[in-house]
Image (tube, rainbow, N blue to C red):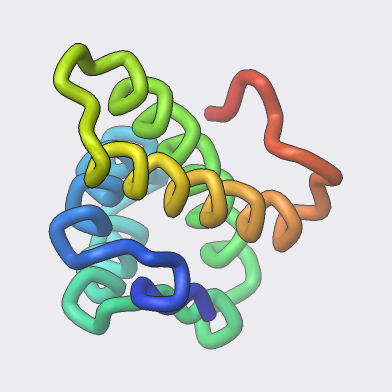
Length: 109
């Protein structure tokens, strides 16, 4: 499980991450799974079929990296933005560990 609060993500931040991930999802069932994650304030990969959990982890790992880069490049980056980027980095590391990566990949899907 990747509870939002343990990663320092707030609901608005999770929604932003899910919005970044949605165009890269395999289909409506994966979209539903992420919408449910937002509603429940967390993603329970261990309760999802293994194939879907893997797909979601890959997409979210990539989305967290892309979103962190975009937030970092903002001219108006403030303390909240820096906290958001840190939380995204933690999420990216945890998802990478779930996927078996030793460290985040440079180019994530």
